[in-house]
Length: 240
Ligand SMILES: C[S@@+](CC[C@H](N)C(=O)[O-])C[C@H]1O[C@@H](n2cnc3c(N)ncnc32)[C@H](O)[C@@H]1O
Image (cartoon, rainbow, N blue to C red; front, side, top):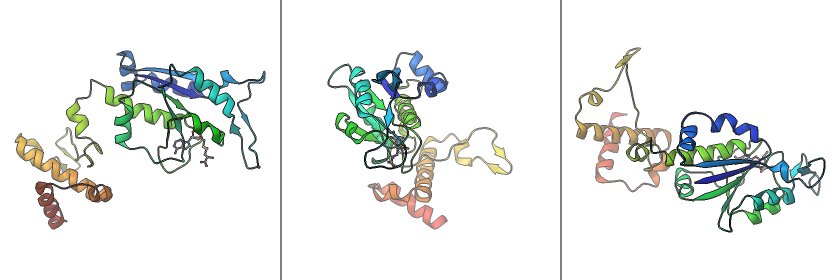
């Protein structure tokens, strides 16, 4: 997979691309990430990339001609998918990351300041927001998108573990524990220590349902519950 990021602040990616799992995925050749400075596409000698908005208003807007020139120079063909980071979109979900992880190549455009001239929207395939709040720029959102996609490509993470993680199967992940078996009086549940896989599976499903009920009940509204899940939910309700 090849991902190109268009940004005014390429230095922000240094630590991100050179650490931990992301570095390992890149080193393994599973992904190639190119970070391009939009300022290199400025048309004037002072390397301006922004200007005041028509009609007034606070702040500066990134210029459509500069950003579009950067985009055109960094798509290898008409099919290269272009993503615009923007708070004006439906917030990103795990299923979006799964869909985007199947692309061979895409470009992510990072806005900054007050954003980018509206006309840039004509040249992108999709706008992506990482949540209902406004950040100073698209750099962190682009890293969120890249991080979420790259970990799906990682052969180091088993497909079984990806399947059980929060959101993948429409539920939040069940609580997990490691050593010590007791900490400040809190013990690892007995059932997880007994090695009975059938009991462990049922217990983890029940705990995943409970986590979801307590933290994100809206996810359960959308779920078609199996008979076993219905039973476990009644048990949870009786225990609360
Ligand atoms: C300060 S924001 C612009 C906000 C814009 N004036 C508005 O009110 O909708 C600058 C840039 O940060 C990025 N950005 C900010 N918040 C974001 C979010 N929640 N998701 C994705 N991108 C975001 C976008 O690239 C945006 O163009």
